[in-house]
Image 1: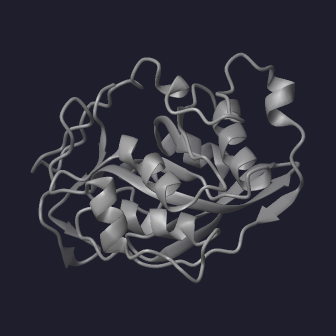
Image 2: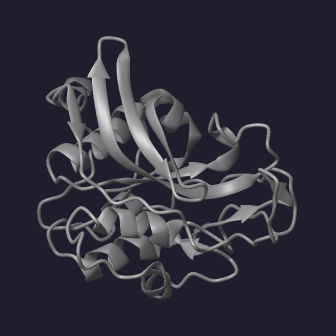
Image 3: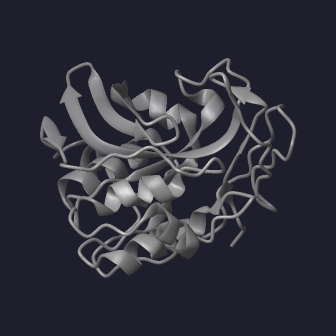
Length: 234
């Protein structure tokens, strides 16, 4: 499997000076450059990696089976926190996910970051799910790569509805409405904690631990188009 990390390269963002951060080897690479980088395809076989006993990639399910069957609204009770790392907010996103299961005994961002093996290059995406599984056993997190919007929606909403867990959506900074045009590029985790289904489409509420802010009812298609190779940790 190719090693892919969460990382950001920037000089000044939202008025705060940031140190340049290198991305992973064999993954989206930014280094000290502010220019967008070519995105690699999902590693072969990714969707079948680290499967739990009751979770399967969506595969060839039909549009109807993937798109139907979800309630109109779901929201999970979570504890939010801003990232304490300048490098990457994966430990904070992971801590927020863990807060669903153990709100009174949460490990620190530092401990989570150590287990995720965060470094100056960011956080290897493949380390996020195993770290969450180490700290709780009620939801076996896996890392999947959605090939279509229907798959992406299925993974995110199934995590919230069936497994009562917060999916982590791996997203490109520069593709999100709130970072677009700010000269910041790379991968970041968004923790999804709520969704709403309407006739006009699905809207998903996410938390960006980097800035410590919720973005409520973001159109699902917007998040799908902003995703990194459709990556969802659910």
